[in-house]
Length: 225
Image 1 (cartoon, rainbow, N blue to C red):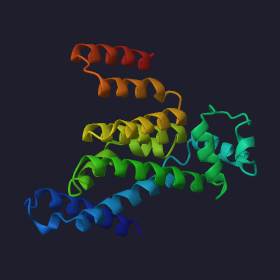
Image 2: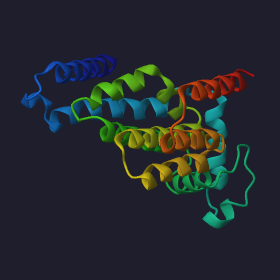
Image 3: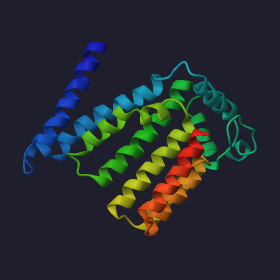
Image 4: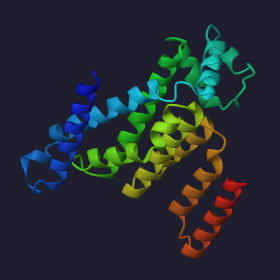
């Protein structure tokens, strides 16, 4: 099985490189050819979300909350007390997931699939299809996606929304759509509020580089402390 999955991964990477080096007008850059490595990388991302970091306690915390929610109505769920914070969209997400199962694997299958769909959507809005597999592969190789999608539910979902919002901003999309994604990210995890506000400020105003660097420095210091 490992030999098969490794061969599939190598094939997807090679396919991605072919898309990049192919001539601009080549049929190799057709959408269908880009779809295949995208799907392969996405399956790997979801599988890692289900199986990765399996022995870390954070996963069990979210599984316990999923089981705690199961059997309640959506209205009653909002009155429950959780070990984590009670962001409204996180609670709603967990309630929806709880209606399909209460295992750790099921929970992280839903988290991984949701995060993957949002990330790929953002990438496809930002770059042509033939470039998307390379961007998606690079994103996975950096490790932050797999770390969050396989471990911390609220942060993982929230970061996916922030990523998609940034992609829409860079494409010049209508304001209301990326604003919606920023609001969703904040309602999944309260810590996304200052980040969402900063992204909106940078997108809607002309912020000087010196000011942006200064704010980044302050936030970095706060993170370290």
